[in-house]
Length: 124
Image 1 (tube, rainbow, N blue to C red):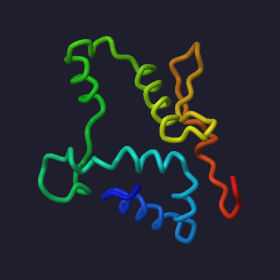
Image 2: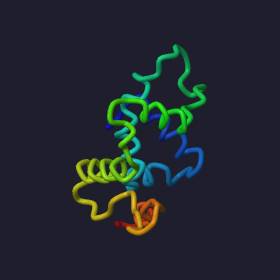
Image 3: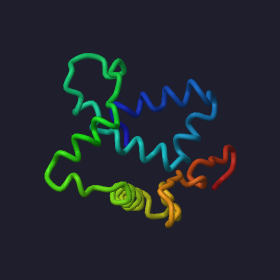
């Protein structure tokens, strides 16, 4: 899927990975997922002008605002993580991995290392 942020993603890859950028874009499920999830990002930008100049949201403020909403105080990370993992599988049912891993008896989370590895010049 191509949209307004796809070019920005490709530019970052080109800057950092030069001749491997296209292959990385095509093989990385995480980058493809980010591309899918940013297709409407510029539609939510309320300030006129260049989105690249936007400083970004502060997570703590977003979390506090979420907690103020009805039933927001009950929201927990594992529900958000599960939603992302489920949505990722919806986009990429052929992929055997989920992006967010959590050890059951801890509050620690990891990005699945299998999704961080890209093999250049080889088929996966």
